[in-house]
Image (tube, rainbow, N blue to C red):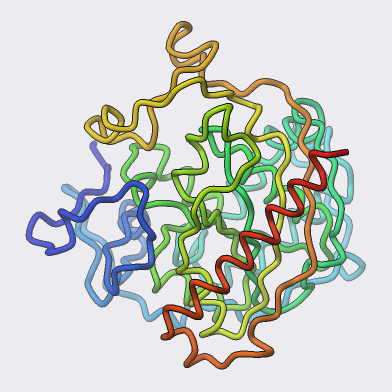
Length: 363
């Protein structure tokens, strides 16, 4: 069965370009991930005031009010959790601390469903965690600092530089925050809409907590006191060439608007190593757009070795979190409607991240 989400051909937004634009610049958009809950036959989500389209052969349940799927239990501290025994041979490789952190995420799903309204499944996270944990510890050998700047409670936005074609930088940030926060916090990464249109990949993304970048989704996460990860460079970040490595591209600004509206701090984060994991010699953006891809790069290994040429090199990752930018202490929610102010604040975030990157790469 083909479960790939498709846009409604009568949707006036269907012809808007997807790649390389700010996912928040349209007031209403269809969320491709919304259909994924319907494919499980248990929940149908309203996207931007409209029902998610049905899937051939499936009759999804009626729309469930979003209020029933809000998190109601507070995030537990590690000290309050009972020891978690390993389930299966693979989990025996994990320590007691890692198993407890994974178990603590169950509070994010507080209903009879196995996942939250956006498709997050703590069980899928638990089963896939060992794979990404091995990449974190053994392949990318991640080192990080500045965890004291991560808020322990309440909504927050982590804004980071982006690179490396495949989103391993996002995966490493998500693991790092989960491993270095108490109570353990799960970063919910905002992704571009094209990722929600990839068969199988879209299901995996949703189940491990990725969220399509619509205003409704961003608003829902921040209203639920969750921590959101954004890459303001968007697609321009992942297709940087060697000549542009470690240089931030132009920022999209939607995340600053949401930070002001929700009075939420922005934590700048620098990722060192992602630009080296798949060094791009040349990019073919026009051909990539025709093929519906975010980038079509020429690297030392791609396309010469086929899809295997896109696999990341075993570079060492360094993650650095900077002091939060508390714009909400100086500006009111109504200031989110001032485009000049929002543009100015987005530049401040970009400059702060660039300074972190420059500091770490000069060492």
